[in-house]
Amino acid sequence: MNDTINRRRVMVGALGMTAAAALASIFARPASATPDTAKQLLQTLIKGEPKEGRVAVKAPEIAENGNAVPVTVSVESPMTDKDHVKALHIVADGNPNPGVASFTFTPASGKCEVQLRVRMAQTQKIVCVAEMSDGSLWSAAREVKVTIGGCGG
Image (tube, rainbow, N blue to C red):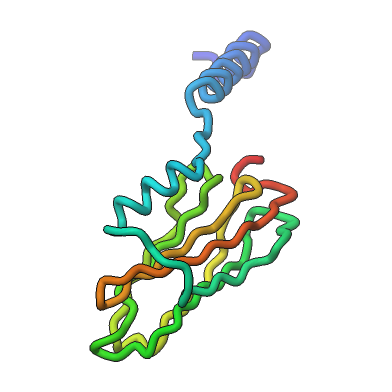
């Protein structure tokens, strides 16, 4: 068998790679979340309507690059057996997948605060909902303007 590279093999290989790239671009189009899909996701995670308050979201107003946007979320809670944060859910309404993260807490956590970096495709709102041990729900939101998208934008 001849192992030399010839023009025909190169052309067939290039044609195959071009066809594969074309098919991938047709079938693998990134979906984008909307405020409605983000709200639907939250409704599956929590039961009830959250009130505004007790949750603080710190994120830059403008992110020059959406690859790693720093976000800090904290919840006012004494973190005692009778009054603590059970779960914290974070969604973004403009990413291909609206679910960013969910965290669980116990009184042994000491405080409810998370710091993370979120990849953002475009300007969007980050919504955070805290589930308390008494069943109450608290939320906050922050819009971040993204100048260069991190999810392929």
